[in-house]
Length: 279
Image 1 (cartoon, rainbow, N blue to C red):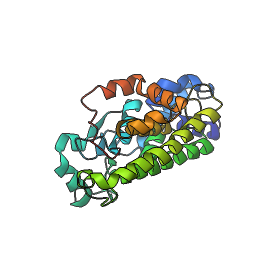
Image 2 (image 1 turned 45 degrees about the vertical axis):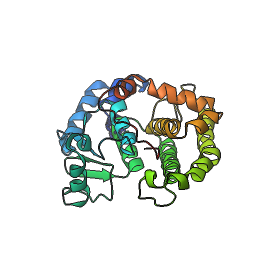
Image 3 (image 1 turned 90 degrees about the vertical axis):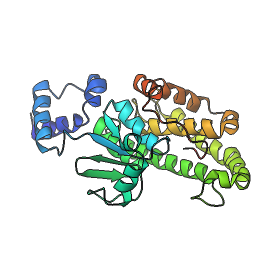
């Protein structure tokens, strides 16, 4: 097999095990099993800390932005340690700001760690793990579109959270309930419909009939949009219900019913919703 084709085999199977489990039938047959085995050996030789567990560093007791990362691990079927849920808030503070992190600096949670590799910022983490676990498209163009959607979800969440904190972004919503009411109404009536209609447009424009946002199979974009929709339904329910976005709402239900996601949502690994702020 030419070197170029062998490199293709390595690239195609880097996202194991999910990629091998769910998408092997989509391969063209050009990557024979002997070469897959050789590629796996080469990757194992050069991979760092392959035996180290994945860790998620995020605040305990709340979904928050960490939930987007949890969903990637859960959909991929990859074991991980939820450090905050296991050790409490002090371990998150220690890791992020008091010297516990010896890897690449973290500005704020969520962060992930595997061995000496550390990465933070929700959409960046999702894109990285998506590539690791077979939840990103193969083409550069489609992958760029996935990252575009991740960035838009980040904007949508930030706007939605800000409406609950108009007086002091860092203070609890409970000390600015009255001040927040017009902003919550404004977001619910003016901004939420625009985001939901954008998801609707993505589903309408995708020529593939499988019902995903980009391409023919699930990506981290689907997981991000699913959780944004769930958060909007939780904290902007009257406005969510009023928006005509049938395909986006059906997409939300379909992602929630995927076997691994459904099992996660009913497990004790799944953290509760906060009382406000799309968290």
